[in-house]
Amino acid sequence: MATEKEILVNQKVYPLDVVFGAAFVNLDKCYVFIDKGEKNQWKVRLRGKPGCSAKEFNALVGEFENELLNQALRAQIAEKTQKVRDLIVHRALFSALPASDDLGLDDEVGDYLDDPLGIAIPWEEKFGKEEGSPEQAQKKEGSGEEDPS
Image (cartoon, rainbow, N blue to C red):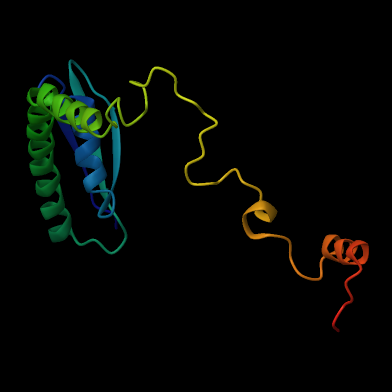
């Protein structure tokens, strides 16, 4: 037999996001149904999952009501500290940007062709052609050298 209880929650004290937060915390313990009640109320129906005893369910209802308070307090704190959190995140992201001189923005003319690491140099120019390649064979034939193999 499934245990069930309906709770009427004041919308002015507990906005819908607070009710959702409390419901989410308890989803693993019971089924939660939220609907619009009469005159600024949310109608929340809790139903115990199979195997939930009446005693466990009563404790669960109390936990849900406590979680409503917890979520309401979290929402108030989040609202009051929104500006501070935005400033902290803004400062962190701004300080992570490289300085303008690191980007080469202060140079009069930034040459994109500069290659101090030699990345744009072809492999053959950097290390020479591979022994036994068709190009090397053609060079040896043209120079009159014999292949030692």
